[in-house]
Image 1 (cartoon, rainbow, N blue to C red):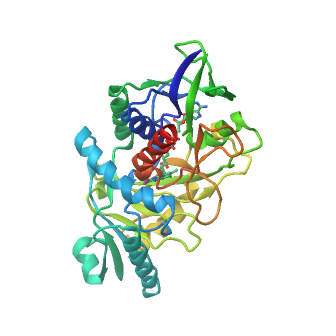
Image 2: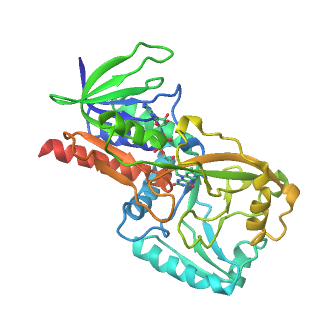
Image 3: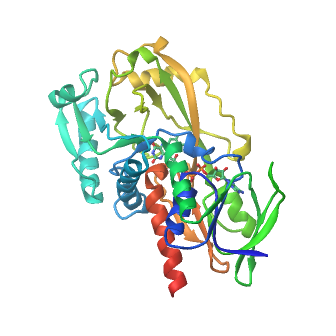
Length: 378
Ligand SMILES: Cc1cc2nc3c(=O)[nH]c(=O)nc-3n(C[C@H](O)[C@H](O)[C@H](O)COP(=O)(O)OP(=O)(O)OC[C@H]3O[C@@H](n4cnc5c(N)ncnc54)[C@H](O)[C@@H]3O)c2cc1C
């Protein structure tokens, strides 16, 4: 049986960042992606925001990986020639009662190490975004947007330059302890037969399927993920450029999302979203309906008009959607980045990689590479 030092399951941004970080440390890496191309999962269905890091409780993995990951992401995009724009972000209070929430976010952000945060009043908001209605805003000038699929492909390319094998159409179907690590069973794809190999380490970065992949090794253990849909509505192209920062409301008190916000793409087009649509608890990732219900438009219009007074019903069209792999439907849950409990060493699960997973990916990659190299040296 062929052997490798590290196998990464999943070719989204997280798996590619792990493969890149591990390959750059000189280890043999095989990345296996079940789809015919990389970045077909949640990586291609999100807001593409490189978050600042002020939302997450200090001391959590999300806070740490988001702050360090954004810096790594920005630098990598510059070096790799991938689209990235530091457009900045405003979290807006539309009434005085929301201002204390901005102050809390400012303090939390500073504690998390987010740079250059500033509170501005109505005049300050008008100076930055004349078309926004708000009584105050927390400004995060370092928040940016990126080409998420471009980043993912560039990370995979750099991993390959450092000797990694990146295989698409390669679904992992089985994981079992072996004498020197883990046996990985790979199903057949369009272009090749299935095979098995042994791997000293297996990193499960399977996104929405991460709990399924964990169950291949132990059906009774591992975290269970809950799928929560986030829908977007496109704003009419004639409004492109009317808002130049990302604009978010004060987040809902239950921390279930960041609230329906204004997203920008690199071409300056606006969209609103994502909202929070709970899917039935037995929904399997492969059964998700990726359509957006036009009936949700009224809620988007109401949410958007709180700070975009000029928004009209005819400006909104159903857009894309993405699915969050959450560990809890309500409230804050941290990323789960941990060895499989109760199993032989060498199997690492990355579960609950919802937002800010895109921003955090490169920091997660560095962390995982460090865990593996430290364990091998011990
Ligand atoms: C609506 C929405 C908005 C978001 N906005 C942001 C944002 O603005 N900023 C931010 O930082 N984060 C955001 N996120 C979160 C971010 O998109 C995710 O954290 C990130 O994309 C997760 O990447 P991933 O590589 O873990 O997962 P994925 O991109 O889903 O990749 C997992 C891969 O594993 C593959 N796979 C699954 N099973 C197997 C198997 N058995 N064998 C081989 N391959 C397998 C899948 O095909 C898939 O390609 C958002 C998420 C959503 C849903």
